[in-house]
Length: 322
RNA sequence: GGCUUGGUAGCUCAGUUGGUAGAGCAGAGGACUGAAAAUCCUUGUGUCGGCGGUUCAAUUCCGUCUCAAGCCA
Image 1 (cartoon, protein in one colour):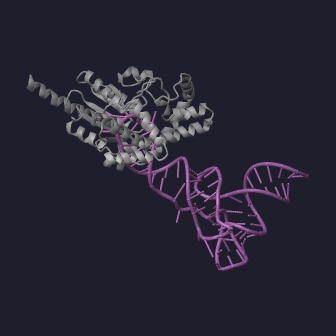
Image 2 (cartoon, chains in turn yellow, orange; image 1 turned 90 degrees about the vertical axis):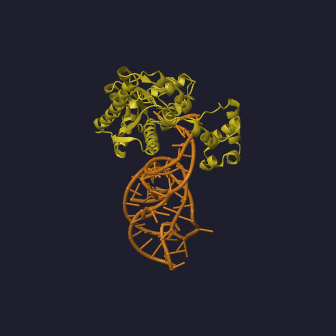
Image 3 (cartoon, rainbow, N blue to C red; image 1 turned 135 degrees about the horizontal axis):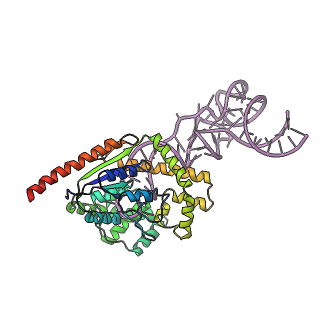
């Protein structure tokens, strides 16, 4: 545990204003920001990804933002490794505000990812092919049950993605997720830094309104134009293009939906995304929630207390060790 | 004014040869270890437009009124 590198997770659903909070906090406590949003990791996407403006980026150093170029894709594993690198290179005494809405990535950095042999392209193609065959999902699910009944029981037949991933791991490593996880749990080390988790929270109706407003704003700022340019560059199949805002705009550019439908679909899909994010984060009882509209000062006080508690301790340690 | 076609779940619509109804979407809840803004699961009572009539029984048949769209005057 490195007590001189405090980490503050600023979490929450999309459009809750967590980025603004993180920006203010990082300025006040002379910290840095590490992005933890799977879409904002990517370069080239700007408006639909709701990235900070160039002016905002001037205020505080940002890391792991806009750093994955096409055709590369970000994964929880790669993000986890990149996060460790950022933390290793960070000077001591600088608080890191990790902000984003991707619960899976937060989990990856906090709990760690079990080490896995890279699954070959041929293997992925083969498994995908088998899944697509009639009755394929049932057969592969049965194969999964043979090797790893515990994991198989948690996966629905319709969840082809997870069945495929489970089979890929079994065929490349010779063991199932449950065993891999168990072995990892025995050797893994806890999160290496002092950690505080906070997040802004809104009433459902208010967040709904904020999402609608933000969608209007994105379209006004030129989301359609941005998507047309990305399509011109041949990036339609690139991972961030299937995220909310981009996938719908592609439908519009292709003429499948009109502008009213575009607005409506982005708003609806964003709301559903926000709900999924909320479901994820509400499971973590360590997160301190504050009122999105009026809770900033309260949140800041909690952060301050957290940071102070560390400096008192470390100065005592230093005095003792010198 | 006449004719035609419609009026069924928040929306789009199925359906009941008469035994009071069901899909998709939306909404609500949930899962989640290298695609995660992804992927997946659970969840459907609504005067079947109003009022009468026929019938053991009408949302379904008949009459009438009403609303909407279209056509003809």
